[in-house]
Length: 302
Length: 302
Image 1 (cartoon, rainbow over the protein chains, first blue to last red):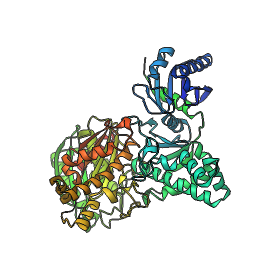
Image 2: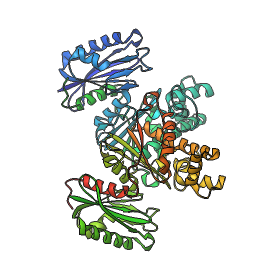
Image 3: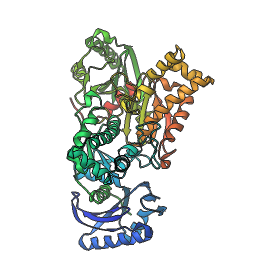
Image 4: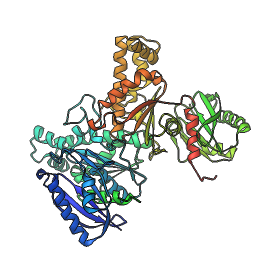
């Protein structure tokens, strides 16, 4: 039994096939060209699915996409990253074409599930995955099961308030974590305050090289991120934090800092009782996670 | 099949019996007299258990107690509220006397489980219980199951950081929620700033009566509590918040304020999608929750 996964992103769409042990057997990607409308992107997806079908017979499909979306009804709710699409009933549209059960979840949740089931979080009872790139997104997997929450917004810690009446950042709460600890925030400060055109990556590389201003900036960013993670500890107390996303690429430098700062902000009895690890999957995380999600939906018929 | 519950508190110890539908059939309380040492309090507990046994045959026991504690090994870890006891292997001590399986959990978690299974949170998929009294404590029940976390500290939102580098409060993080939104915090401000000897309750009653200074103070306290709950929404997104504890007694006045302020701090798509309700249980919550926890531990032998 094989399962297909679709990772629908603002730039690229990826389709892959996994087996029953969540191993990625095949995958292909194309430009999603979302500016041409959702009907066009669907045509791209159907082309990729048809080619995958030449290799493997799959009996269900998981789709991950940027939020907001309603995972229960399978509808995209006008996601900012998929410009001007409005609400799209993507599960119905794909199922009507392919005639197998189709499931939808958000992309950070898909990545979390891939890491928990077959990646860096495998074997832990409770896994908290956080990706730090343009934004800050998370997913929470407890005993192998994704917890999405009443409105599908479990893991949306980018909107966690860490500074009351703090900085405003797009449609988030004033003082939200994402305004302080995202790649966007780090890049903005790097350019505006220091003139480092390379943004977040340049700041991190300068810190690794030993430049004191950069070390201080990265230290500050990791402090805010650690406040967010310590708050997660005192909310669900996961066994492991799996960290991914572009900002965490230099994980060998960043993870020890983040780990130390998070442990400074938890009860004494908790210090050192949870792990930090770098994500096992990169660009394939969404496809594997979406397919894993669908493969776990047992006994479902159209 | 009946189950016994023990609620071991700093002032009183309570013992009760529930049936398979978590109904409280019998209960009795006594002073715990913790200052006389744990051996003395155990004698009190055994007396209460013996009298309960004259009425009902119970085949397992749940104990709840103030943290910190290790629910896996069944050991109290020198809890501040049980003075000078040090570490006490309470599960072993009770089991050796009574010869039935014994389980331990913290008191806020027990109250959360009682509310989720048979109280104000019954019927919801995901229940977040918060008690606001001396401190701020919580418990999280997902699909009827208590999530305690790697170190047993899920729901310890009293230690959630909401003001970086903020006020210091006992052994918590600087800027922790409990320093801003607990009964202790409200009482301190009421006395020190306004001279209201009746503390938190007097402040709330003055606000209800329409006194503007009191209204402003309660508003500020509920704002901080709402920041904490909004952060819980963006972490696990529960279906319902069940609120209990002495500070929430005037729930008809406080809950609408708390609900409005929490909804102001979540994504637009989430506003109004989760409920707020007042706890169904009062002083009996711990006994019912501890017994419920034990009754859910199926197929366990000594």
